[in-house]
Length: 147
Image (cartoon, rainbow, N blue to C red; front, side):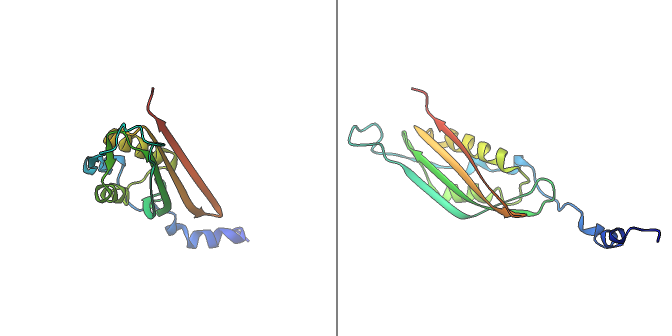
């Protein structure tokens, strides 16, 4: 026998070991983010308000294979002067759809873009990745405005 038994099987599926074309992080559209003024900013009534926005419809792609990755994104923040406008946030999240990016980079990029847009007192972004190969990950990044 000239070949090991699995070599022939591996050869049959070699065409599947490829990468699907995808875009880089420059395709993320942070310019679409819009905010509106928070009328209760700085009011000393009770505890500061927290806004939590969640979606199970987030997709980006694996930067190795180009295959889609799915995740639950949770954005929790205490507004300063501005609140994120949700329609624009949806467009922003959709801009990741064809972007090849590691979740560990994605969560930090998302936090940077959102903090720049609305200048919150505090923000936490969590990305709960759907299992791949039996492994599920949750990646979190947090910002707190300096006192």
